[in-house]
Image (cartoon, rainbow, N blue to C red):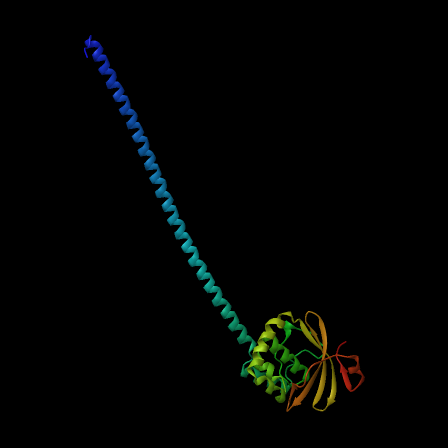
Length: 246
């Protein structure tokens, strides 16, 4: 090809250089922009990774704190259970002291017959009276004290409690019934014989129930003897009855 004018050739070369430079600048800007985008993406990724690691660390810390609290709660419940058993179980020293006080008449540990005794007021008061025996028995039932409960029965009836299944049934009964128990009240006592009486007793549960409870004197102690039965007005028509409350 023959170029007619050197100036035209120079102009074309200049244009080519400008175009080349323009393309180069554009490409460099694009490369710079892509690099900035890459760096921003990497920074976001690193920030997200760091945030994820921090969140995982906090989660692990919370899990450890939760495990610690759960373990402390289990230990606290166990300690409370053990403390309740200790409070519920009368020691030999307490029983001996109680017996001495009852024998000497130095203290009246149980309310007078006819007084309403709420669940919180129940106590182990020994077996020196029919009313005290009944209160001690009910206290033992509410406290889950199987030994004290069985000791409130006559020797003949205690033989029935030697069956291991009886203790399991007792524990099941306590879980289902004791929490609903509200209180008790001895309403009257009927003399059947010198060593036998019957108590007319109000038991407050979800509803009020009145029952007749046979009691037998064994040595110096009174014990539960025989099966409970429901109250009937016919009970009032025979025997010597001392009424405490109506």
